[in-house]
Length: 164
Image 1 (tube, rainbow, N blue to C red):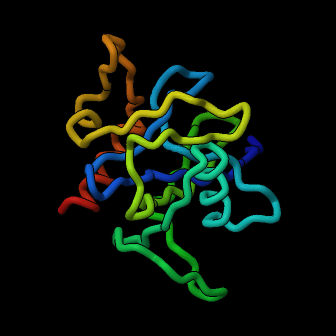
Image 2 (tube, rainbow, N blue to C red; image 1 turned 30 degrees about the vertical axis):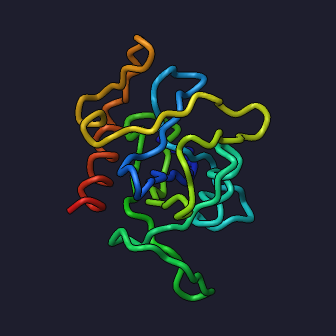
Image 3 (cartoon, rainbow, N blue to C red; image 1 turned 180 degrees about the horizontal axis):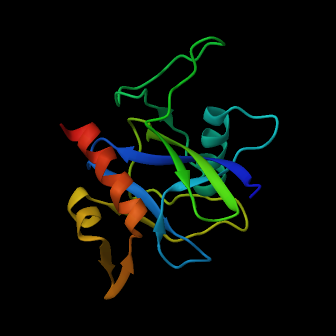
């Protein structure tokens, strides 16, 4: 079988003050997902994830290295390493290689400030705690919004990396 493989970059955007990550309600699936999307042909994975963070939330971010520490400088030899590299949809003809990054909001970020995604992007954002991730869902205004299993697993590892 010949496989068609795509590459994506994903960010678990972390607020150090509240110890929560930003997820959004995916327009197609109705479940909570981190920010991210396809890597364009001219982009490196870390460039794509920073672009996706901006497009999907309007926020700026600082990427973490693979140990969860902030990476302030990027040079042409030592690029930020993803926290995880996922090979998804293994039994499908279209597979995906996902570069998963941990990113930090700027220190002066306030969760009460409205996020400003670009036109056409999801507008339903949720700051989610580790306990909610482990629960596999959040409840807001009486609505239960699920967190898919693979997101729950990866987000749990992100929290473990950042909080321990």
